[in-house]
Length: 230
Image 1 (cartoon, rainbow, N blue to C red):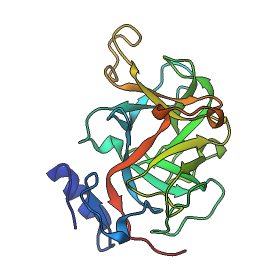
Image 2 (cartoon, rainbow, N blue to C red):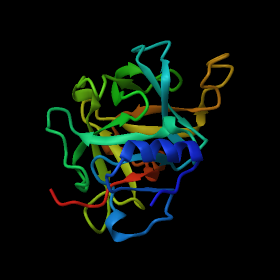
Image 3 (cartoon, rainbow, N blue to C red):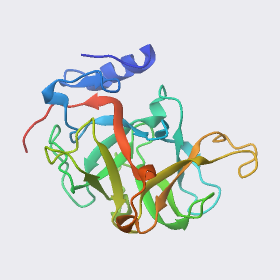
Image 4 (cartoon, one colour):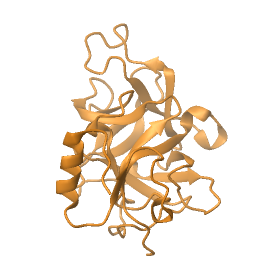
């Protein structure tokens, strides 16, 4: 089953998948039990409560670490908002289709650039919280512990479900993946930047002690592999 946000993206996905069984869904349109869980190897878009999507691109931060920038983008039809779920740094490759248990640690790498979602104690450019960046390279095997994120979810199944809200807790810094609709790049804080209009994504400090709705994300469009027991 292939239903995509654009013809070009549908073709790209079909070529990439070949004969592997998977389903590409938009939002909540597909409710088969086999695809109700987010599984290892799935490639998906993460939607923030603001309606923006976790996004990256081959543009580096001009401050802080100088690594690849990560933002949140309003458009839902952009392949630069696709992220693939991988095993945590130091583990063997996770089994394709293995469900992600709440509380487990994963990495997410950017589909187009192969950079891992990463954080550290460099200051983010607008809010001065922890910077979020793209680091290393999935195909080249370049990664470190700053790419590890704990999946914090509360579901009846005990697993990350496509229809449930989740938080991503950064193990090295104690922060969590965070965005606010009123903290965006504009011509005052980023004059002439290609990311004007996008939201800053940062790490919220001491997140285990802070409950904020702006730290929650939800699986949106994506390529989801059916559940396979590890």
